[in-house]
Amino acid sequence: MTDASLHANPQGPASTRRDFLFVATGAFAAVGTAAAIWPLISQMSPDAQTIAAGAAFDVDISAVAPGQQISVLWRGHPVFIVNRPAAALATLKEAALIANLRDPDSSVLQQPPYARNWHRSIDPQWLVLVGVCTHLGCIPIFEPNKDQQGPGWPGGYFCPCHGSKYDLAGRVYQNVPAPYNLPVPPYRIVNAKTLRVGENPPGETFSIDEVTQL
Ligand code: FES
Image 1 (spheres, rainbow, N blue to C red):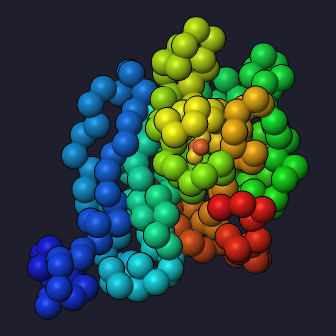
Image 2 (image 1 turned 120 degrees about the horizontal axis):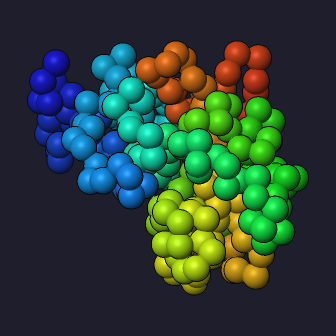
């Protein structure tokens, strides 16, 4: 399938599935510069207009290296997908970090029931977040490396607008403007290669409209 065949509206601005995988936003230092990972929106997914309207779509996660984050666009919001290495997961259980979090147990409804756990995800390896700061809606920056945000920083997200901070599970720090953890959208892991954004696992009924704040 060519790019041209992916255009949603040949009369208007080119709108392709690539528009929904809009940037490789970062990586752990060990990963280095993000490799070209464009062909990630599955050709089995709906067309661009349907995705823009909120349909679920598949992302090929097989090319996302350990430590790397990609962003896709869903319902007009960035969705971060991170391949978390074991070292990143280990930080989530550090007592010093947990003591600094506002809602370490995800007690506020900011995620589906299947992501209300210590790693806020279905599979600990794969973090999936709506990348919208719960203060006033800026897009937090992925800063996954130790000390990247100052001494003692275990890795996480920093919102440049007013200084809110989140950990590598999207849990918000205390004493920052953002009141809630980053939302987790409905999603499912179809197989080792495919993550479907916008659709729950079988038997689950979560809607992103249920979250306390997006
Ligand atoms: Fe993120 Fe204000 S919008 S800190």
